[in-house]
Image 1 (cartoon, rainbow, N blue to C red):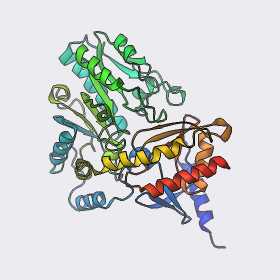
Image 2: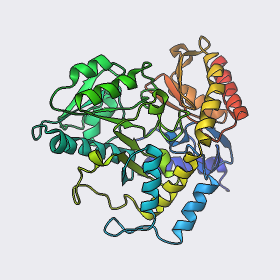
Image 3: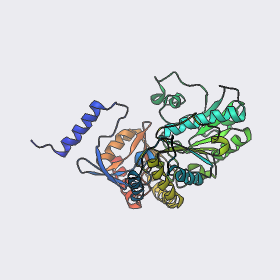
Image 4: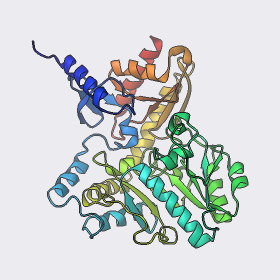
Length: 405
């Protein structure tokens, strides 16, 4: 008896469930191909991707310019380690530092690695430059944060799913409410090395801070000789209609943490970007990565930075976000209790009477739309910045149908 495509999809899901650790709860779809803003499953069904791999696919699936850069580099050189120089890292670092308006780039692979690196840099700067007593440095973080999954990072998470049962945890982190500049001011003392924040909290449900908050943080950090570290791993690189979410308030942090979209949806690539007086505190041998700064990733990252330098994608995100916002807000009171949006990044709170975020995501899946839930009642919308307004309209119509049903 022949195996149908439906049987194939079910078998692949079963194989994954049997042999892959259960640290994710994926939606029941098996993707096999993708192009632009659309993905196709093993059954031949097409879906509009409104997740973009948590903003790693800001430029869509298989963007021709990024794929071309990767293919060209694959034929030349892929890995040397940092034991040697390679001819791609310098041009990439130069372009990225210019995009950020900073001096130095420390390349890594994943977003969590960038955050861990930022923490090490902040502590080293605190001891070597600010003069904090050894082993006493603290970093201020916000409630509701999501910076990654390493044991250090989950140690200062207040999400029980991320935090519980993985201790003991590293000390040195001070929690304040997100968006509360007065609380940050009160928390800063002689041992404070840095304030680490997401300019917009992603995993929390696209939570925007109060207007002027980032400006106050910048002012406080300057006045009190504290580093302002902006985790722009999800919010940066065009997603919110600016190159960085900090640009929405005209703020420049001391340290940018970048990742996800920096790899163009091709491979993992992250970076810490700061000036010489901050990032220069790290000495040879104190930090590294076998794959960090590899020539393949650098070639892809350079192409991404070149695309961002034109401003095209930032402009698209801003215009399409302005198109999407009223359509989403029209759903408030009709199955939606709240909408938060910045560029092409939206958090949509589902009325519990209409189901959970997961249930709505599953129903949208059946109608050809991919989103992901978070924190129970919220779905996140973060399509590739290459999406068309008509495709956004169609997606909103599917959400309306799901809620009305």
